[in-house]
Amino acid sequence: MKLAIVSDLHIGCDRFAEDALAQAKEALELASAQADAILLAGDIFDKRFPKPDVIADAIDLFRPLADRQWPAKVESFTSKSNKVYTKLPVIAISGTHERTAEGRDNPLGLLGLAGFLIDTSEATTIIEKDGERVAIFGLGGLSEDHVREKMEELDPKPVSGAFNIFMFHQSVYEILPFNEGFIRYDELPKGFDLYLCGHIHSRIEASVHGRKLLIPGSTVLTQFKEAEQEKKGFMIFDTSTYTYNFKYINSRRFVVKELHFDGATPTAVTESCEAAIEQSLADGKDKPIIKLNLKGSIGAGFSGADLGLHAIAAKYSNKAVLNIDSSKLTSPEIDGSTEAIRDGKFGGMSVKERGMSILYEKLKEHKFESADTQKLFEMLSDTSNKEKVLKSVLEFLSAQQ
Image (cartoon, rainbow, N blue to C red):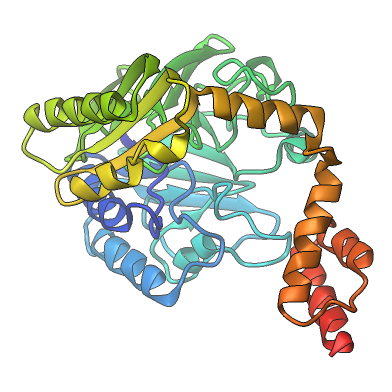
């Protein structure tokens, strides 16, 4: 059986909404034309609560799949809570972007209710073609502190007489070794013939329990990460040969360039940035996404405000999508400010004292000088529940009038 493995469409992505929709459309059209079934490894949507027009776009995107005569069919669906409303072999799990509180519907579930796909999160779906059976156990995206508990509760097992796939949507420590809390290869359930993972936006092949782990990557760029410079697409896996091919889609070029400076003037920085941009534009005819990483130092007497990076972005706004990162470009003035923050001092005042001073001046400016600055500062410092804090602050200020 030929299985298209598609992941991280991020429909409704704010930064590149048009790219996300166009590239998802191409991926699904090619996948439906070349495969017996489609497996979607999470983050079909970019947000937990997408706007109505985004949901409408997704419905338009998936509707043609329902009109196709698929070679494979759904044989069975086993779940403790989910229901199935279609026999289409379009099998999906929810991602971390779609995750909602337990018991609440998520946007992927809406597509399932409409009969455009089967949400196999925490469930097993078996598809069949010409006597061959493929069983997909899905685990939707979870917080790192709950994934192990959930796997222990579900205890995923392979289905006898079927080609078994474990499809999940998590960060994996061996691929992203910067958080000890990420799940590891040896913690994934044993006995499956193939492991599929979403969430990670780069294309990866690895090995888990002696079998393939495949990550197709996203169909759209959502973050300016160097690892995402490769072209986007999806995989088609053949169960009979245990091999796969990567199918490319038309995706916007993403170029990352690193520029180093040593005591440079703002003019020198500007000239280097523009030269790098011009070179990137010359390499293709599309409107690329260009990220410039500025490193090193600028000369004494200059600060980041002197660089005019916004002017550069404006100059090339019709030719490229620019992201210029100057966070690692230092100057004597920046170093002095950084040292003040590190020491917790601003002109003899601590960071907290400085913050309270600014808050008092703002209150005074808006005729709230009688308000208890200390109390208000402490209220604003509470980050546990932003909505609750905002409500409390508004009530506090209203009482001062």
